[in-house]
Structures are given as structure tokens and as C-alpha cells.
Amino acid sequence: MNYLWRSLSLLRPYWRSVVFMMSLVVLDSVLSLLTPWPFKFLIDYSLTDAPPPAWLTAWLGEENFRWRLLYACAATEVAIIFLYQIIGVVESYVTSRLELSIDRDFRSRLFGHAMDMSLAYHDHRRSGMLIYIINTQGGAVADLLMTLPSMIQSTIMLIGMLVVLCTMHWSLAAISLVVVPTLFFASKWYATRMRNRIRKTKELEGDALSVIHEAMSMMRVIVAFCRQKLEHRRYIDAAQKSMDARIGVTVRQTLFSLVIHMSTGIGRALAWTAGGLLALAGKLSVGDLTIVLSYIDKVYDPLETIAYTYSGWQDQFASLRASYGLLDTKPDIAEPAQPRQVEPCHGKVEFRGVDFAYEGRIGTLKDVSFTAQPGQVTAIVGPTGAGKTTLISLIPRFYDAAQGEVLVDGVNVKDLGLDDLRRHISVVLQEPLLFSMSIRDNIRYGRLDATDAEIEEAARQANAHDFIIRLPQGYDTQLGERGSRLSGGERQRICVARAFLKDSPILILDEPTSSIDSKTESVILDSLDRLMEGRTTFMIAHRLSTIRRADWILVVDQGRVVEQGRHDDLLAGDGLYRQLHDLQHKLAERKAAARKIWSDA
Image 1: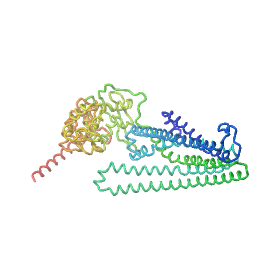
Image 2: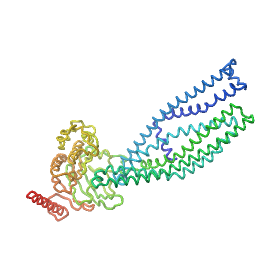
Image 3: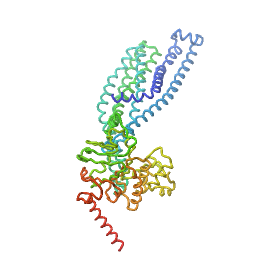
Image 4: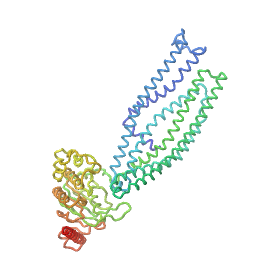
């Protein structure tokens, strides 16, 4: 029930709509209670010789009283039904608008919270499951809240009908409640037994969606290795498990429905029999019997609604458990209580005794210390897996250091607001990641208020303008998912243009030319040279030829900075940098010799 109370807070912005909706629910209930009464007056005072009450005679007059009463009852019934339908239309509109608004708000909260989580959080969770929670289970809050009006209406109806029945004949009211204990225990048993089964079913459904999401994002690999049938089989297996689990839930829901219907059916039969015996004994008039039978027939509708709604909550609670579980996960990269600012940012970056380890691993980074002065180009080299990318990821707080400090202009990055910190940092990654929108919008992602002229100037600086204007739609060209309509080098130049547009004092280049050919590399390196001017730059590189402009070089191995200095000084030593340089030099000589042999042949 905790989930219910938490969900009620979502109604606060819409309290006027809630009050109006509840007013309609009460009016709807009153009209439903009034519906049988015209028949009682018609039967007792128009079709029989029973003396009518004085107020009714005074209202309709004694002349042609029965005919007038007949017409009055028919008109009253039509008016009640008309009002009932009008209220239903208005109530449907208000309810739908409120439900969709709550659904949008809650899904937005889930999505926003997922965006606020650190990369470490996303590294350990399947994207498909997050999509399932936000897109599928996120709607459970609105579904749950929209059951409350029907629960309230059913409760009002039940109380109203029982009051009328008790007033007319208390024994019939007591008989109609005989089945209540059965409904209560059946609902309680269902809720207890089904809770874990429904939760497991939703997890399996999320797993099936995760298989689809992963396959779509890995389509190039799947096609390259001809593994379409394997992935298809993976999905079928996952879908079969979720289907079997859902069938099990459905069968049990059907059995529960059978118990509810049989219980209310037995209750109706008992109440009808008792009412008929009282009428035969002359203790109930025909009109009273009509009212009694009508109410007894309807008294079980709200009972069934309450029982079904309570049992249906178990499905919604299972979804809410996952949704609120996401919301209750606190971001491990937290905003400081009183964030500081560095304005203007000069770009001095300092590491002091920094340690870091990923979950389940130890010693990813150990006792890292160095200083990058404003405008300095710092190259980071070392073997694969040495911790280079992890090291620079600590600067924009993609991850947080376990020990030590990372400072920007003398301020610990943990004391800076995340938006303020990352506003001062541009990143060009090894994989050029682009959105499916236009080239113009992809570049504008660096600074949302940029003009078209500024976007084109950034593209020129990145050596991208010429190839963009040759495209049929130029800057308005839609790139497709992950920028698939451009070559790797073209995508990377768009990313460089994005960094130019952001114009941040700190620049991170994570092997931006590692996956492109030598000719394209020279074009991109030329644009990167311009981009690095006046900026504190960190450049990760496997190919030492790409760090030609480095003022300072950090050599990282097994999480430690084992060497640091200038190129000539490091080359004069006999450390890891010299080994990497000699190895790449020999490899380059072999490639050159191979190309010569091939050309001679």
C-alpha cells in the first residue's frame, strides 16, 4: 500500500480535476441509486389500487392521477438516464485527460531519473530492461490511480444500496452480505499467492524486450557473423518463457474470476428466494419487491468491482515495484549541496593521489597524480586496458574517484555542479556517436542556442562544411540511426564540429582517429589542431604519431602513471614509452616494406 500513498502525490498538480471528477462520481452514484424508484411508484400507485402518498397527489393532482403518474415515471426515468449518460461522457473526458497527464508525468520522472544516473549504473544494467520499466511498467501509476474512482463509486453504491435494503427489510440486507467473507478471503488469497508470480512474469517480459533491443543495436555484428537465426532463437526462447509465465497468471486470474462470479451468483439466488418468499407472505409490496430485487441484483456489481480491483492491484504493484525501484536508486554521482563555480574557467586540471576501481574489480587506477596547466596538451598513452579512458572520465565526473581529488582551477570537481562542470568540457570520443536527426541539429547539440551561421563556421573549422554542402539536403540531411548514412570519417568530423561549437576551455579527445584511414586521419588531425588551440587538452592515443602537439605525456600501465614528461625526454629513457615507440616504429617499417613489395609486384 506504500506505493499507493506515494502515487497519490502525483495528483497534487491536478487537484481541481480530481475534485471535479469525484463530484461526478458522487452524482453518478446518486443517479444509479435513483434509477429503480420510478418503477416502484409506477407499480404501486399507477398499476394497483394502493393509496398514493399525499405529496405525490398534491404534485400530480387527483384527476387522471394514474395516467399522469405513468407519464411522470416514464419522463423521470428518461431524465435520469439522460443525466447519467451526460455525466458519463464528461467523466470519461476528465478521467482520460487526468490519466494521460499522470502517465506522462510519471514516465517523464522515470526517464529523467534514468538520465541522471551515472555511467557506472548504466554499465551494469540492460538498456532493454530500463526501456521496459519506463515504457511499459511506467503506466501502472496512472492505471492504479484511475481505479480509485471506480472503487469509491462502488463503495458509495454498496453503502447506499445496503441502507435502502436495511430500511425496507434488514433481513434481505443481511442475506445479501452472506458472500462477503468469501469474496474477502478469495481476494486475500489471490493477492498473497500471485504477487511473486506476477513480478517474475514482468521480469521475463522485460528480458524478452531486452533481447530485441540488444539485437537491434548490434545488427551489424549479427549480420556480419550470420547470426540472425541465433538471435531469433534467443528471442523465441525468452518470449516462450514470458508467455508460459503469463499463461500461468491468466489461468489463475480466470479461476479467481470463477470463484467471484459463483459467490455472487449464489448470493443473488439466496436474496431473490428470500425476497420472493416475503412478497408471497404479503410482507413486501410488488413495488417494494421490484426495488429490492433491483438493488439485490446490483449490490453484487460493486462487490465484484472491489474484489477485482483489489486483486488487479497486485499486477500494478508489481510494475510499481520496478518503477519506484528505479526512482529510489540514488545517483552515485551526486550534486553537491552548495555547488561552487569556476567562472571564468581557465582549464587547469590537477589529479592528487587518485584511486578508482569499477564494481567487481580492484586497482583500475592507483595513486594517479599530475597537473595540466591551462592551454597545455597532455597525451595519455599506454597498453590496452591500462586505464587511460577511465582516467579522463573522472574529469567530467562520468565516474567519481574512490580516493584522492580531481581539481579544475583548484576546485574539487565534486564541489562543482554537474551542469556547470560539464559546460566547461568538450569530448570527442573514439566512436563518433550521432543522433538520427539532421546534421545541423547534431552540431547544434554542442550549444543549443547557436545560430545557423555559427553552426556552419564550426563545420568549416572541423573540415566538414565541404562534404556537407555536397549532400542533396546539405545541413538538413537526416543521418539515420547513429549517423549510419555517413562514413566513419564524416561522422567524426561532425563530432569535432560539435566540439568546436561548444567552445569549452577543456577538451578531451579519446582516440578520435583510431578507426579511420590515414588520409582521413590527416584531415581530422588538421581540424583537431585548430580545436586544441588555447584549450587544456587531454588526448588518448594508441598511435604515437597522433600526439605530435603534446606538451606533456603521461604513460599509464596497470592503472598507474609509470612515466610522465616530454617526448624527447621519455624517448631518451629506457621505459615503457620507449618500448611502445620502438615497437610502433618497427611495425611502420614492416608495413612500408610490404607496400613496396606489393607495388613492385
